[in-house]
Length: 138
Image (tube, rainbow, N blue to C red; front, top):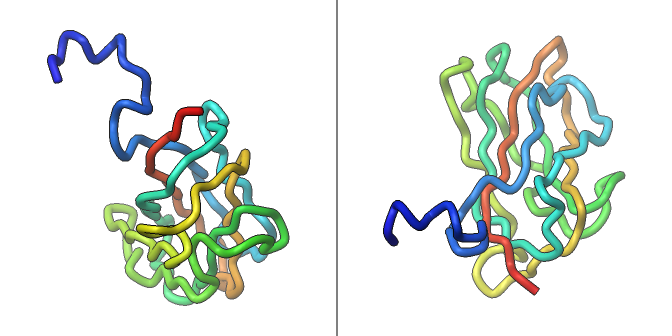
């Protein structure tokens, strides 16, 4: 694509754009934490979710990402997802997308996603969560 014409294109014309984020997620909480989706796309496909910028070595934090609060709906990332690869702020972990949302899976139509840990870190800890994917036009 001509770089001079990119500005006139809609995000749906590009693959795997940043769809949403949660900055400074509390990795020591089992409460629901809303991942704000930009532009509230009516339909989208999650292609990748990245956790990074951990404030401490996340040795025990475990939990998933859901399409509804209170661990509602079919998990986008399973509740068994570990964050132990985040040993420093400069590390990242690609979270494992559940099979129901990979090729042949579901297109999401929710306004936001929710991080909900099943096991907290056990001390003050934060990390950033980024959701990448495709917007599906109506």
